[in-house]
Amino acid sequence: AETLEAKPIIYKQTVGVRKAVVSDGAKIRSFLADTESFELAAKTYFDALESEHLTKDVVKDCIKCMRQELGLPPAQEMVKFDERFDEIFDACDGDKNSTLEMPEFLVWLRVVLEGMADIF
View 1 (cartoon, rainbow, N blue to C red):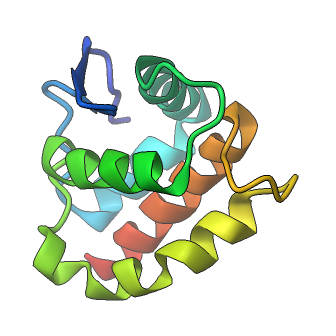
View 2 (view 1 turned 180 degrees about the horizontal axis):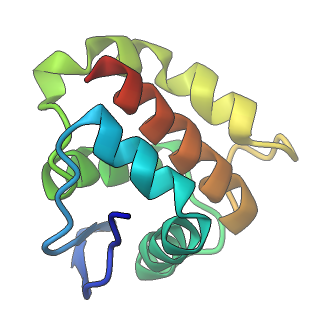
């Protein structure tokens, strides 16, 4: 299974993980199937963002950074995701406070990566 075992890099409220390259749908699904590695990676991203409540803007910046770090499609290929960003964010915001806390971020990241796996 793919793992994300590396030091987080913080980019102005965004974070990436070095040497984590997930380049196709099968690898993404394999990574998501390894619940322990996935949750560890999600926690690493969340902790590196240094906030307990992530706003939409921070989460948007996070996914832009993660695209590159995880080897996901470039922004121009993610138009459908960008169009649905608010819908996905709002669906994962269980307490409807317009921010994502760690458990909600975990759900959000899984939903996003599952969607990207389907694109490949």
